[in-house]
Length: 283
Image (cartoon, rainbow, N blue to C red; front, side):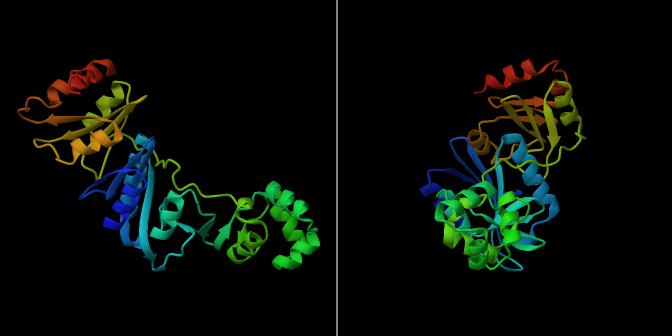
């Protein structure tokens, strides 16, 4: 956790650590938002936690990442793994990626593979004066397989990829953008609060394993809503980092000077403009 935070700070990110959440670190630099789970073993993450990370990432246009030392065996540097659809990688790979050296090797059921940019491979082969036969002998595959690489019809094993990279460099491979926004499957709103947001014209979802109970979004307006009689202290710093509004819906009496409503008051809103205007008064 500490090593990750220091690395991100040195790269110019604003960093917030959380406890009791599906992600341990929220980091932001410009429009790039990262939700990071730090584990010793990536296999220890549950599908529930991974889905929660992807759900929140989709709403706030963030990237969900698992940083771990191993996933059973140790994670290799320069390789991107996946757990329940969330990228998993070691610290060295993450550090390289922050320095714009994105990985091109991914772990699949077929083993470690890479995707070749076929046209670029053909151009580099012709520039360097290699025939299909000459390159096939250098890499250790058939001419037909080189032709498949160039047509984009086949992924390449990690050993062949490293051999090709020694000849032409890494630019012939598709890089894996671990900072691409993550998206989870949309879930039907179940709670009364989430359903009300939907009636007001918001995309909304009930949330788990985060410091709020409902997330709602309409265009650029994001609202993190907690339902209960006590506001989570982690909500305020999270709000400022991801540029969202927060709302606490109290079951009983509501405090002053914070964006809070009783459930009855919340359910009386008639449209999205009313609630957004109410929240803007506290900014």
